[in-house]
Length: 338
Image (cartoon, rainbow, N blue to C red; front, side):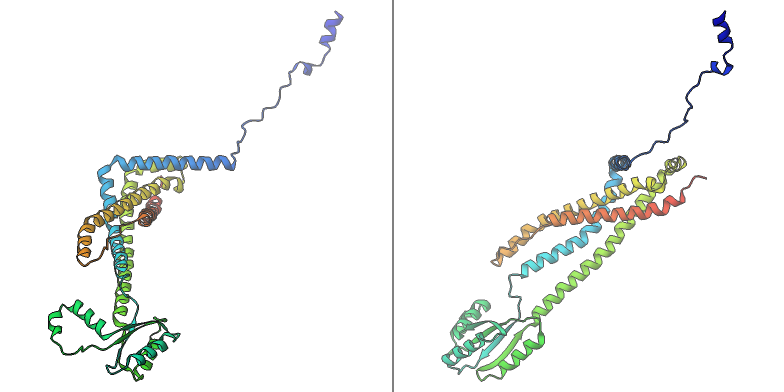
């Protein structure tokens, strides 16, 4: 009874069990490494998906890549042709030289003294003496008129001093050298062989500028092709884009697959452009080698090497990325859930 009464005298609150207070939902925080890994995983997933979509429609993708390849191959072929042209003329005497035609009555000792004086001149890099006999033999070989020249009583050609100036870019200094040589008693005539070198330089510069202008125009064409292609992709996936934006997808998230698609079109277009250049070089190398061998030369075409391979694929990929960015930035803003 005593035990029962003591239990009954206890406060009522002592019968209530105290439970720990629930803290509710816990907000989880993601670290920088988790966000970075998630970003990389999404990029890998989008890249694989873009490649899958590219090869899912092989005909349409190949046609677009081929258009890009042709647009890139034209300026690249012109640039490669200029490089081969410069390589072909590199073996020629591309430096301006001064030809001093000596008086036919000049004595050999006086000519030797004149040549030694010119060799000591700091403005002259090289002096070459060509005797009248050597000049006549070279003329017979170059002209093919050996039978006609046999009947001449005397050699009509004078001795020549060929001078190579050190400074070939200063026309005023070259002209002063010519004027000083013309005043010398042994000089009969002085010719500055500079005009054809200047013409060759100007033609090369003209070709380079034309190549650069054509490259800019066709690069713009590549961007427009990619813009139109990505626009069609966006329109075909309009419903999917609306659903992604309804669940909170940002424009950057939605834009990412189309950027990878532009990279695919550009990269494969650049690869095809390099293949077209290589095929053209292989097609022309045989006839050009035969033509050069007929002139006693072993010249051969140089094809697009590793630098062209990297440049075409990298440049085309960047153009494709730029075109996709422009198309996605413009058209994705127009697709918003109502």
